[in-house]
Length: 378
Image (cartoon, rainbow, N blue to C red; front, side, top):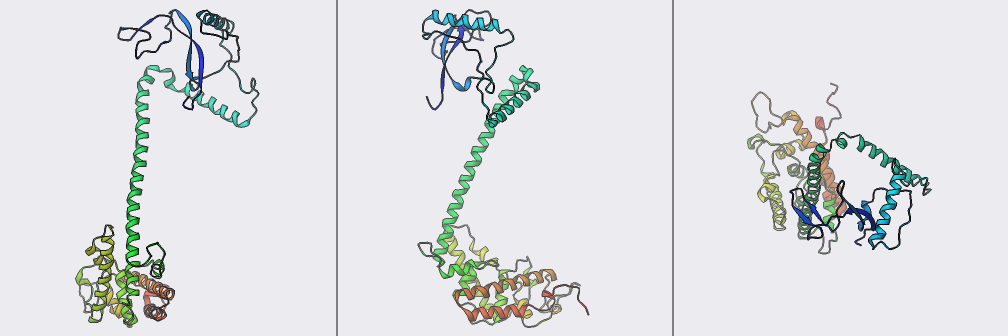
């Protein structure tokens, strides 16, 4: 019944037709809410009753087998069982022998013996525990332990629910990202990757969506290699420098910078319209111009000492207050991005633009910034 095995067990029960509760109230056996059979108290008259119980309440099985009547519905047959059980108890004063699975049932499976040894070890630990003998303390702590287990289980359920809710959030973000890719032409309505999507997959050193838009819209086609490098510096420069720390931008960089901001604004707008949490203004502002003029001068052959301002508080025209280490780190990252875009252009078949990015990489890779070591010989 319900996937559990049930046993019919003949047990000694109280023969009285009523029981006394802890509060002193007498309740008739068989009343609503009271079991029909109750365990006998010490010195109380008993009678055997056949009770149905689940098998998981069975703790041990005796190796002693006695013959009982086939029909236990009559009280005489149950009294005969009670006498037989009493005789067995009198014969085995030291305790009724328990059925041994190895000796009596001849179980030789090693896995069983391993489990049996584990059970014996756990039982020994239970009996050796100080709470096993301290019944009062055990009765006081056990409800608290049960409460702790219930809290732990509740935490597990809530954690699982939180993960499921997080999955729903990520699922919504995934849908928004897919909408962005469809609107920008990276994938089709059937989620088939287009040439634009293949190009974006090859970019890892900068914002792949904005860079792909600029490449496919021809933003770099009419620009010289050094200007391309200067524009791309906005994708790698992340220093928190003041507005007056960077040199003033030359006119030839103003127009490409506006194109970059327009593409970034379009990408951010599409993301916002696709229900992604994007602030358009903040997204555009993350492309900082602090390295543009410096990169342009570096690509045109300026010395490193001509780019960095003196640390005595004076600042010359065309120089920056950025730390030398920050400049080297950013230009090295910029060179990685430019080389990456050269490979991307080969993938999409734009050989001319690929050669332009390769030329920009060559312009940058020189002098102390790309030296193998700072310990140079004179």
